[in-house]
Length: 107
Image 1 (tube, rainbow, N blue to C red):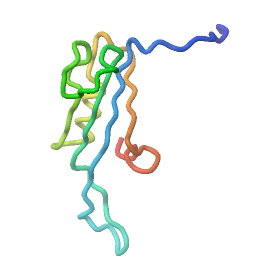
Image 2 (cartoon, rainbow, N blue to C red; image 1 turned 180 degrees about the vertical axis):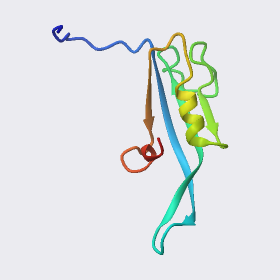
Image 3 (cartoon, rainbow, N blue to C red; image 1 turned 135 degrees about the vertical axis):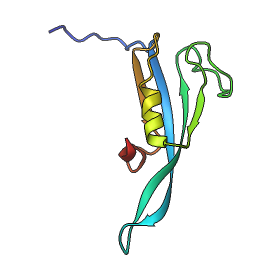
């Protein structure tokens, strides 16, 4: 076992992804509750090469397109996107807009 190091870990090989699901509540599952069905997921991402760029419409030379929207299969498409191989990337950190109360339940 190695001793702990007193240094900040490097984020050079990390992709940060922020996502948010939108749902419908058209499906009644009981008299008092309705099913949330994901219909859209939007995400923004950055790496250390583009983290200081405010314009998300501008592609990054390293991590590529910085904004994505998935409609057909929002949950499956998000998971597929997060698992895509990226030669420069060792870790993907995905952060939901409202993970504590809502967005993480679909993953």
